Length: 118
Image (cartoon, rainbow, N blue to C red; front, side, top):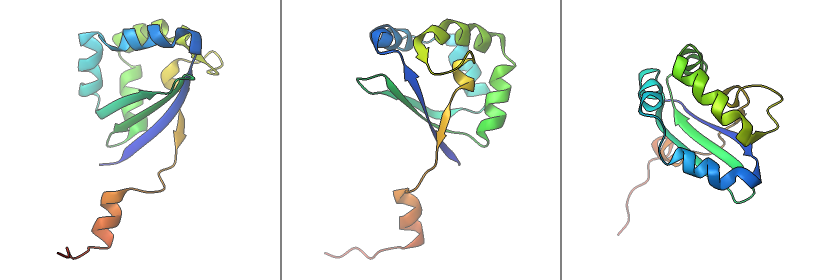
């Protein structure tokens, strides 16, 4: 399963409110994410507002397009937009800066099996 990582910048002065909003995401938003192929989706927030997302999806571009077609996503993105800096008028889910994976433990272990010594 492909894994993806992305960053966004939450406005530091809105960080606490952003966290509160994500403590109780709308049930229909959660259902839409699951239905459109977002799996093992997590968000991590640094003190200065750097947001790091990690998600598994068969194809993140397709999953994003499927979400973009939902009414709940349009409403959620409109409500979340004020929390973000540096998205240049785009919806937050269109402003992701994807990161390139350079290391994955399980992949390397599969490529180089080790013998347990004991």
